[in-house]
Length: 78
Image (cartoon, rainbow, N blue to C red):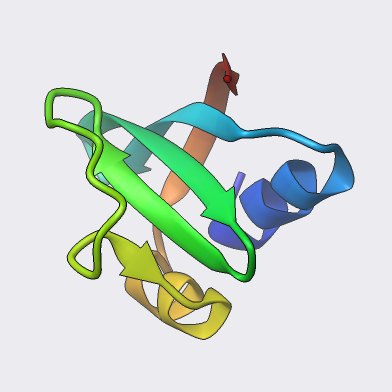
C-alpha cells in the first residue's frame, strides 16, 4: 500500500500507532508511526521513541517525504 492508504487505515480506527514495513525498491525497513493530535511521528524500530520535532510530520510533509514508498502494516502499537 502507499502512504495515502496507510493514513486511511491509520485514521479509520482509533489507534495509538502502527508498526509498518517500508519498501522502496529492494530495500526494506521497519518503522513505527504514531499520530498525536494533527501530527504524525515516524520512528525507525531500532531507535528510542522521542516525540520531538526531528520525528514530527504534518500530513503534507508525510505525504511528500514518503511518496513513492510502499508499506505493509505489521501490527497495531499501543
